Length: 200
Image 1 (tube, rainbow, N blue to C red):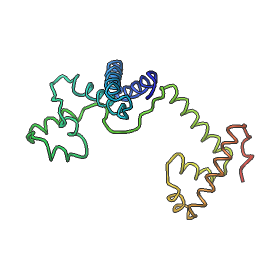
Image 2 (cartoon, rainbow, N blue to C red; image 1 turned 180 degrees about the horizontal axis):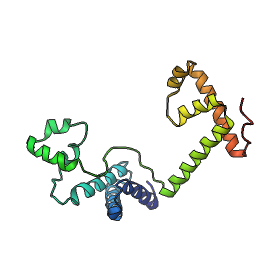
Image 3 (cartoon, rainbow, N blue to C red; image 1 turned 135 degrees about the vertical axis):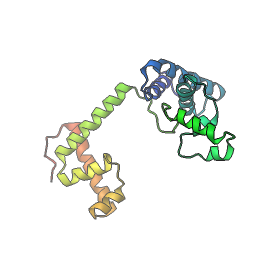
Image 4 (cartoon, rainbow, N blue to C red; image 1 turned 60 degrees about the horizontal axis):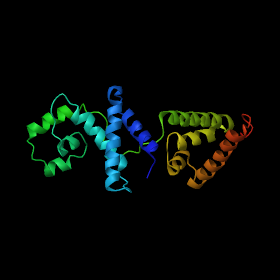
């Protein structure tokens, strides 16, 4: 179970995703109410992020619409790629579903189960600065070939096997290079090693 401060950060980060300053406070409140209602039923629940997202999505897309929308599963599934639930269970006519689709395509936010940080916007910015500095240091202390591998893995999120295939070297070779590069960059960041001193 997280602290109240962490739940507040979680709801703030979820609310900011809607890019709707006029309802930020309401979204946060909806999320917190949903979280504490869930925890009241199950103090060890691992659904707190999900219930907060659902509550905010419903507030932004169902409760504040200028037209009345049914609080039904059709409203949740109509704009997703997977319409199997609607195909199997919905009793709505095609005309009603088409109308609902038109209204919901302008919906805000998402119910996707993506990871949500419990860090504040300030903490996220600090981490971004750290990442930026790390790449700058890596560019200074690694040779061009190694730096490109470093970027492929950490910036482009390529798998080691894909890097090995592209560079026509073994995957174990890529792993060894990355391990060596990480140690070089780590020392450079920690001890302020001068530029180019570890290039080879």
